[in-house]
Image (cartoon, rainbow, N blue to C red):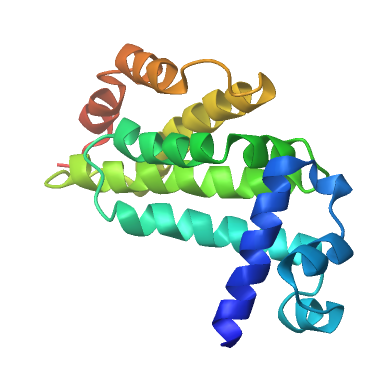
Length: 185
């Protein structure tokens, strides 16, 4: 029963976030729409930012569980794009809110995860210096994060999949060159 109540609060909040900006949602709005009292909300969540943080963290974990292995960076980022597009208005409301940093942490985590899993697959059988591996992962994660942030800044209007695929197509061979240059004999 407790998990159902927690989920009901989260689902209600998510629906409200699709309808209006975060700054226009109150605990009273959530509990009224959900049919629970304020104490119930505060039993599960310290405040709305804590609710946002939990939801964003769970969404990141969901994407990570869906892709335990990544054959391409684009594959995992496609999942994140699909997820964001399914909740476009809510994502934009979070992005444009004072809780933007929570959204950015989520986005960074997904980008970094995608790149780390991809690096594991392409580095299999190669011995590269750890610092070079880190440089490669940070560079690719920053690229993915930057492109996604640009997309959010511009209202999620452009075809982000196409942009990601093009960016990584232009960078094709970059990771292989890092491996070649940093491989330890």
